[in-house]
Length: 166
Length: 219
Image (cartoon, rainbow over all chains, first blue to last red; front, side, top):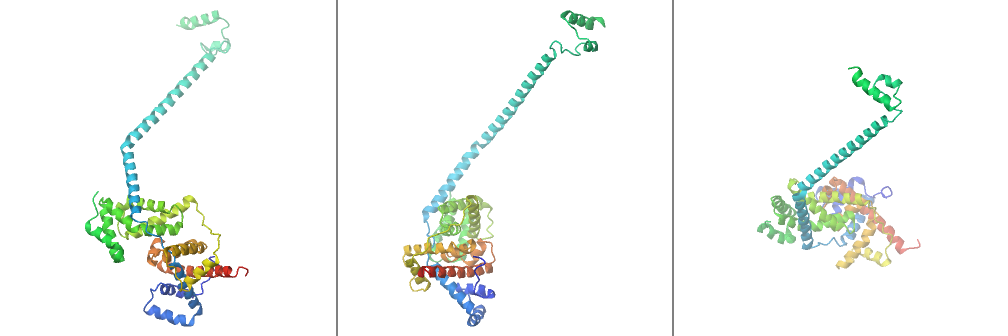
C-alpha cells in the first residue's frame, strides 16, 4: 500500500493543501496556493479528493459521550484499588516478617538434617573400619603388617600398648 | 474528601456552551492543582471532562474492541496515581493522551493483536449512500445513519497503514486538531499534515476502486 500510492499533488504544496482542506489557510500562503492551483492539474485533483474525503469522514458519527456514569465508575474503581492497597499496607509488615521467619526456620531445618545425615554416615564408616580382617593401623605400625588373629592377640596388644611402653 | 470549589463547578456546568480551549486548559490546571492537594472530586471532574475524547482516542487506536472502556479506565487510574508528580508544563489533556497512547501500545503488545480485516464488501445501496455524501447532496441526518456510515468507512480505513488510519479517524471523525495529533503521536506538525493529506488521497483511491467494483461487478 505504502509503495503503490503516489499523491497527485506536488510534495512542496502538500502542507498548504492540507491547511486549505481544513480551512486554515489565509494570507500570503492562500495566494501562493491559489496561483499554483491554477496551473497544476495534479494538485487540483488531489485537493478535490482530499475535500471529498473530509466530507465523507465528517459524516461519520463521533464516539458518544458515555455520560456521568462513566466518571463515577472510574472513581469507584480508583477507591476500590486504594482500599485494597491500604488493606495490603496494614498487614504487609506482618506478612513479610512471617515469610522471613519461615525462610530462616527452613534453612535451619535443612542444616540440621544435613548434619544429622552426615553424622550417621561417619558412624557407619567407623563401624566398617572395625570389621574383622580389615582392621588397620589401630594400635601400632606393627599391627599393619601383622594384624591380631584372635581375641587373645587383641588383649595382648592392648596390654602392651597401655603398659609395656610406660 | 473536599468538594470542587463552586466557581470551578459552575464553570464546569457551563462548559459545553462556549468555553475556549485556553479557558478550558486554565480550568483544568486549577482542577489538577486541587487534585494534587487531595481533592478527589476534582479528579472526577477531570475524568468527566476528558472521558469522551479518551474513549475516542483509545477507540481510534484499538478500533472497536470490547476492551476500550477498560483501557480508558486503566488510563485514568494511572493518571490518578501519578498526578502528584505531574508538573503541569504540558496541558493535562496532552499528558493524559500520552498515557493513553502508551497504554494502547502495551495492550496491543500484550494481546499480540493483529489488524482486523473486514472481508465483507459494501452493497450497492451502501455505495450509493456514500456517493451521496461525497457529492455533498445527501449527508446523513439521523444518528443511526451516521453510525452506519461510520461502520462502512471503518471497513475502508482498515486497509490503510495503521498510523494513517489513526490520523484520519482522530482528525476527521473525532475532531482532534493537527496540533493535538502531533503531540499525541510525537510527530512534527507538518509531518502530520502531509500524512493526513496523503492518507486522504489513499482512502479516496480505495473508495473509487471499491465503488467501481460494486457498480461493475464483472469489470
